[in-house]
Image (cartoon, rainbow, N blue to C red; front, side):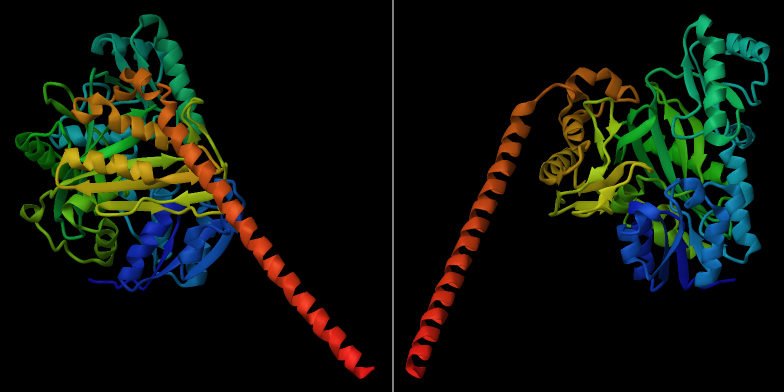
Amino acid sequence: MIKKISKVLVANRGEIALRVMRSCRELGILSVAVYSDVDRSSMHVRYADQAYHIGSANSSESYLNIDKIIDVAIKSKADAIHPGYGFLSENAEFSKRCQEEGIIFIGPTPEVISTMGDKITARQTMTNSGVPVVPGTKENLDSDETALRVIHEIGLPVMIKASAGGGGKGMRMVDKEKDILSSLRAAKSEAMSSFGNDDVYVEKYISSPHHIEFQILGDQHGNVIHLCERECSVQRRHQKVVEETPSPLMTPELRENMGTHAVAAAKAVNYQGAGTIEFLVDDDYNYYFLEMNTRLQVEHPITERVTGYDLVKQQILIAEGHALQMKQEDIFQFGHAIECRIYAEDTNNNFMPSPGKITHITEPMGLGVRTDGYVYEGYEIPIHYDPMISKLIVWAKSRGEAIERMRRALYEYKITGVKTSIPFLEKIMDCPDFRNGTYNTHFIQNNEEFLHANDTSKHHFEDLAIVTAFIDYHRKLKEVQVEKCSKMQSKWKEFGRRRGMFRASEN
């Protein structure tokens, strides 16, 4: 049964909220924004058809407050909610509340979110479905004795991971016997503070791993397809920095095998909507299920660019009850796409966030360039949320051309008022290991000296050009003001002369 969606509340902020609203507008669907105190002037609020204030800057009082968001959906008469990514996007309780209130949740069912959101349960499900998983435990490490026994059986090095985790939180690599218990306690403590759940499990640590994920789509009629892979191995502290597709590691045979297992993983839980199956791949092309993200990913635009499908539109159509209109044989990759995440951060100061007011911004343009952002001149980046400014996406016919196009786009991207990660990303594009495609998740660590080298000459001349242009601007502005003032004085003199003559004639 098809349930037409006419109005969508986007339960998020920033660039992803704006990106979802754009697809809604193309589909003729009205959009509703929600915003916190510090987001009153945010672009997604300006763009939406309606906007509602939901609380303070603290996420727990606004973007993570289920009751407030459901209340706004009811008040605004929105018949669907899109969660974006982050915040409540993988919250089973939120999905369930939407069901109870008769609101369409644009995403998977609460049961699927619960199953795949718990990493231990997800590993068990994948094992039962024949999907290869990294050797490790299938149960929570509930005591020091259990942890020591299991880790000795698996053999060091290992990864201790939070069962409810994500984003690198609650994760520790252990390669020394003496560090096992301290790492276990640290992982459990961080997991509890981040997710309210201190369950952890252990996986065999894979040296030189490649992080590759497959984009999948599943409808309400049992159809599941994948839209090929994304290479996500350029990471810092387990957070992705640059993504590309196709993966330079991939072979046609490996893509077919991994894609088949990605579809099997989604079918195992009757997945509905857009999701991602993440794998680790070793140097011998052995691959293992890592986790499933039951939501849209930050890096989804590069898949859109090489396949031609709008993934947000697909999410909405699936949520309405439509069957997928494409089959697996219809999916192919055309050209090469790369995404760089632009952050407001000081890369020379341990990547510290750099909140503040944007005083100037010039976004790159031209063939094959896409910018998914939300900031503008005068906008103040708040300290309360992720410091990502935008996502810069380029496309070209080949990987080599895509890298050069990204280099050009990063060169054109000018932001003043805050420090950004643009110079660091330019270094990545110039790094030999990235350019030849022979990199893994240790890329940044292995190339730290190159990536942090002080190459000030280029930016010195850029800064000099900016300063020169600024001075020239003010010089011309002053000349214009002087000229206007001179003309005004001349007019007043003429007025005074004429007035004097008029008075003289009266006498």
